[in-house]
Length: 347
Ligand SMILES: NC(=O)N[C@@H](CC(=O)O)C(=O)O
Ligand SMILES: [Zn+2]
Ligand SMILES: [Zn+2]
Image 1 (tube, helix red, strand yellow):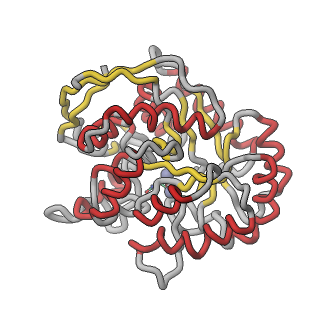
Image 2 (cartoon, protein in one colour):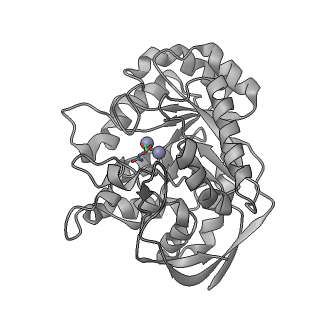
């Protein structure tokens, strides 16, 4: 197969940032994806429906400022804090544009300082979410100092996620950017209320990529890349036909200077090849026929939204990724595969 026409996909986990950075990265997403679940980890975080409405307007303005882009709908999220009130959940549902609430364990990842210190403190608010069917999107890593960084996701399942679901069995959860066999098996064994997003970079790389010939800051993201056995388990999960796994790029742009530093930021930028990289991963697994469900059907079906009506076409024709691309504040960003080739091209 050298040409692949798909229902236009959606990105169920995306960082668009704000201001000039937003304007710089949004076109890459809008050329490929009709909708995206937009992460709320701005500074300050998007903690209320009012802040989400204003952020949504800035995204739509950035979209309108680039002529010729296909239509794009941002699906907004709220950043859960220890102080998020149950009423905010009602307001989120009434808004129509807030589709989920995001749980960042405090200190787990980029801009998570205002995150949740102990999820039990949020029980009343989470109970309201379970009652009203608003999904909780989870960055599933513990931050306890006694836990090895490569084990943070697996330990999160036992210490936090299972107890949370025991308290709220009807809660709808997306286990975000899963990176381990443990998480893939947990989701596969769970009920219909539990789903997961998987990034392209976790399908394509294992942890060797962080140290290939020297330290590679542009391959550092959270949760960090894992062993090959885990990468294989993720590929098996997304190509299994299970409808509770769907596409979420976790494209997370940072300025080049912030990545190439003594203490570099976590996040891989992948929106420039947001669907093409997944095509490579599915192709390598001999499962291109499963890509459309993963990229374009499973997400909207789980969220209860219509599938997109338009299509995109990918061709098996390699192209070279730019060494860097425009970002913000006079700095550039370094996209994944910078200076190297991607095997599939968007027509
Ligand atoms: N994935 C990352 O490594 N970074 C994300 C945050 C996140 O999704 O955890 C970011 O906002 O930069
Ligand atoms: Zn995360
Ligand atoms: Zn993310």
